[in-house]
Length: 202
Image (cartoon, rainbow, N blue to C red; front, side, top):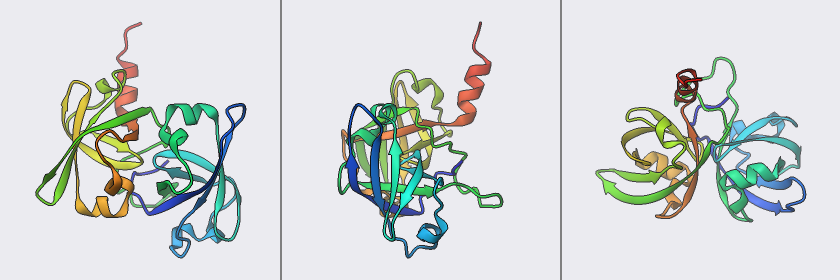
């Protein structure tokens, strides 16, 4: 489990893509930061990469390796990643950690697209378009995770919804590179998912 509070930016160093089997990715990140000291990253550890929970299967002194299924690559933005791609990083929650965002599973529900960006005081108002099958789970004042970042929804109109991204969030995440048309990983609020399931008619 995660909170959607990004603690570091990683960089894709290598991608081995083979549609016939799982993909391998090598990730480098600033290991001088305590949470990402390789001495504290165990083989088998779960780390969210732009919202995608992936397992560490190997590590060196300066990087670690992940394995991702072809299904994950097909249903998230991971299939677009290449050498040099920046990714938002968050390590899994520990008991007693501060819950600064909202409960995030790291299981991406779909891919949203940036349709509009405009300055709003010291923030940027970003409008995203969600897949039609996920739009009903997004509500004003509710939470979403976009590329692993916990955000509050300001407004919803059909499949489109808006969020305000403050300057700090832009500075410490990949949001500073987002432009109109870019795709982001979308995870809907877990509570919304289960409430919808419980209210479904047989």
